[in-house]
Length: 202
Image (cartoon, rainbow, N blue to C red; front, top):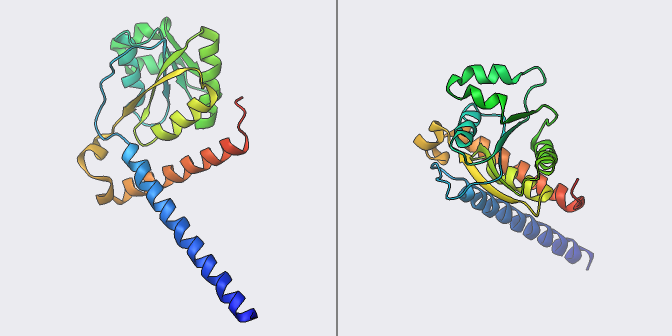
């Protein structure tokens, strides 16, 4: 009887492990399916624009949206504490005038969770009820999850920035891209677990 119980427990353990592996694998492909591989065209404007620092193309794309009057102001969140607006403006001379009127820098955020908190504070300060969120395509699912958690009443419009490397090669054919997607998927899952444990917004 005891040996039968051990076999039954072993069977349940293996079955649970297989089910968990299938769910994780299926979830990963669903996650990858969400990632845009082509640039998107916005069909509406917003009160403000928010760009999360990281990949080089994010800030230029966000500035171009601001110049096109897609939003009234731009928040660059996650800026290094030593970086000044003039230094960023110097890299984009065609758009330097916007840095004196319509661009705000957040130096407090250290991660995506912090980006969402600082974005909420900025949106409340300016009474913005809709935001365009600019970040890399692979980072967008987690960024949107964090933003939606902090600002459930705010309309959030994703604007994913797609790198040329991801455009040129399918993710499954590039080891570096595959590792990036897997890492981001695990961070995405962790973020959702954290939000379930602590459901209250900050």
